[in-house]
Image 1 (cartoon, one colour):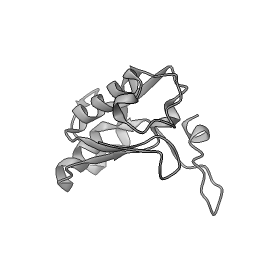
Image 2 (cartoon, rainbow, N blue to C red; image 1 turned 135 degrees about the horizontal axis):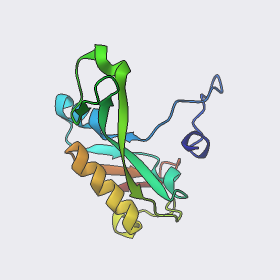
Image 3 (tube, rainbow, N blue to C red; image 1 turned 30 degrees about the horizontal axis):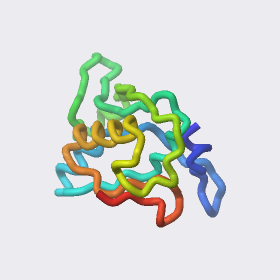
Image 4 (cartoon, one colour; image 1 turned 90 degrees about the vertical axis):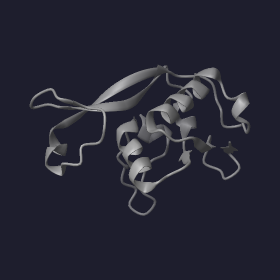
Length: 138
């Protein structure tokens, strides 16, 4: 569904791209090891029609039910990990014409703030559509 709404298909091949829910665990790791001070959150307009939005907040090792809230650097266990999701409410309204953070629906702001809290970095750019001007700067 995310793939269709977001038009996630290769330009050259037309193949569908693999899409999924936001993974805060890997993003928090990227922020940490990359020294990232601000993040761009793109394509949140894709969620305009969703009742609920999921965020991956941990991984579970399906062999022993061990839960990882930080990114496990042992690449040999990755194939055994399953995402654990937290569900947040959607905003059920179009946001592609919004240019100010304050004008976003409350649930969109709550989603953004939840992501910021989970990854440990502020979101400085939010895209609300495919065009260059469909961007909110904070």
